[in-house]
Image (cartoon, rainbow, N blue to C red; front, top):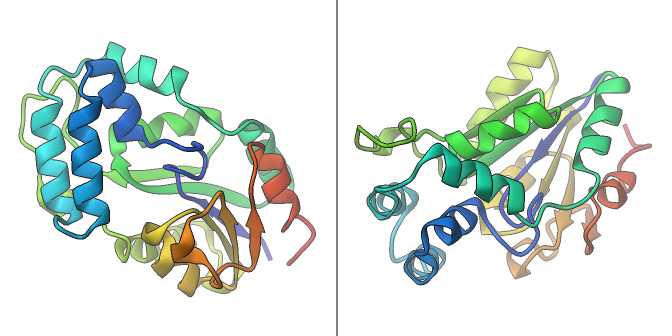
Length: 210
């Protein structure tokens, strides 16, 4: 049976950073996004409030900013190689991230079968963000189930890759998981643990399984 590989973005495909941080770097608002990230991590705000405040922070965002943020982000090496091999094996690969959809969906061009992020309005913003479209850690499992139905893959044939608290629910829902440059929230939860800068090495931990 085919397998579905599910990749987190922030801190996983992108080492030591996150899409909102890289976007904010382009706009010169790193200190402001840093404070919002700390509030979110501490649980003082949830993903919907975070999204609304980020939307306001990025009022001057353009497609050029987004393209530059994507191009200069600290991506792991080997992402496109891994996704090409997954496709050649008849398996599926998808990205599920709490980061803005307009950034996450750029990974479709790298070979992902699907890329799901929190739904933001088109850039430049002319509409408010709808909190109902913002993903939560638990919502990642719902996205996984929809992708399983779309690709005809059972949840027991899924592999998750993540790095932090936002991946705990997903790791609990799949039989095989890889903690990539992970923090303490995934300690003891992952099937495999990888530290480094090459996704090919992380993928090698599960390549022959299943």
